Length: 46
Image (cartoon, rainbow, N blue to C red):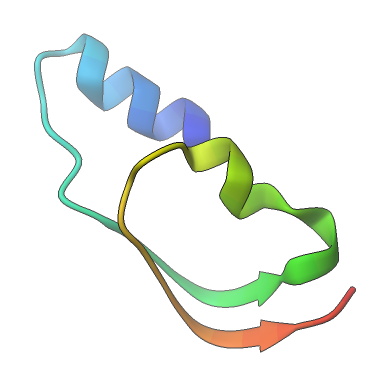
């Protein structure tokens, strides 16, 4: 998802936010998204 956000920005787009259905907290992927607003519906420890 971080790569998709970066691609959008390179094409002069703006990322308003990112929504996930499921977050595996142990993988710490949210940290790679930088300052983007992130919403997660279900959080699970991995």
